[in-house]
Length: 169
Image (tube, rainbow, N blue to C red; front, side, top):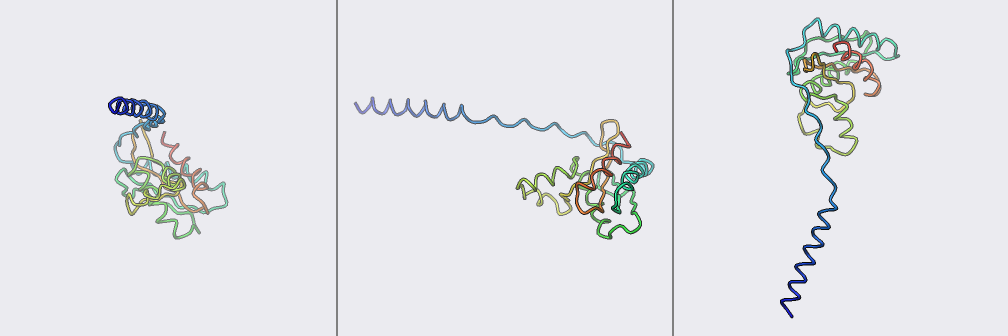
């Protein structure tokens, strides 16, 4: 009798365990790998990206700063609209560095922080989780990044930054 009860308990445990395991949701698919790094952005490419960003920026009421960095995050080119806020200088550079070094737009970090993933702030002291930094790609390779700052919110910094990135595609 005792042996039958033990065998029945084991069978029940196996049945309920297999049902519980079968109901677990599938792990989400991993995102695609980011593009590889290419040769560093040239000064001519950096100026072209900022020129395109300026065209879009001039259509808004805000005064912006623009920074272009190479894949290591080293500053290659910087431009500031007359009257732009002084804090924008460091913010634009940090946005560009974050986008280049992590191979993704800074919007990814902003969205992660908004969804409660505060650990992102611990990845590096220079990480900037504000929209407006975008990797620069040429021939499917990241050659640097552009960072734009100056508006009251990151989403407003995005259109000039995107125009700068698109100018090199």
